[in-house]
Image (tube, rainbow, N blue to C red; front, side, top):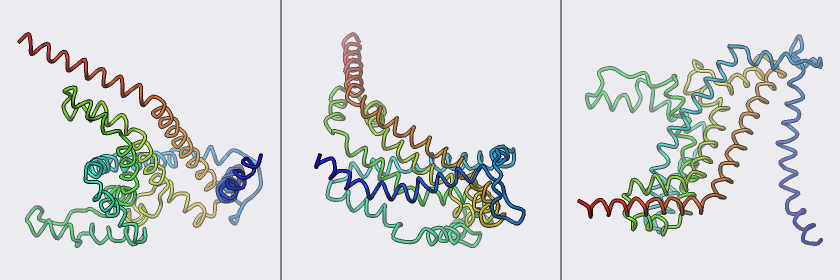
Length: 306
């Protein structure tokens, strides 16, 4: 009984914080989505479902789908960049890994806005990238690298890439080196060991990093506003405008609730994947090693017959 009471005392502050600043605001947003905007702004408490019908209007649905596409592209690019980096760090000597991880997190010593403004300096027509390319003769005139989808994706990837590296590195560092050594001893080449042993075992880290980047990117409004120059609107910008410009709080709450629902489904799916991966990890490793052993024996038999 004492241990149970002590556990609840330890858990209570965290639960209270989550309830006060996450659960209750989500409930208020959900309730607000069923009302309508007043004539002069504010909220008119007439219960209806018009905001949800309006949210699936082709105009707003198109913005949501564009946001999902951009966030998905940023997630894919981040994974493709983060995995090799995390893998290289995991192969480095132990005494240097901490230094490399420190360097990965170093950009977070500066403010998010400052880092985003830095990309404006780099990507504009008179920026460092265009000037460098012109100086070495690669281009004859400046490229349009700023205020488009490319610049937005670049900013999203840059700002969230370190978290993906950490998530994947955490999964890679947990792999027992003897598993990979066993695969190599059975005659599997490095690429087959990676595809059939290393990559499946690091799936939880990849899933966690993917969800992290996607969830933060799909609702981001600062990066599209600054690097998109107002020409590219994502659902985060739409929600921002509904609350602060159009003063249509009920519709803004509806869009927010839909976005929260998408995020919660992704987090739940990621938790299921990680739980299933952790449950099936040992049998899968044994199965892959047996398969590699069989492949090695078949190769040896073919060489003997030859």
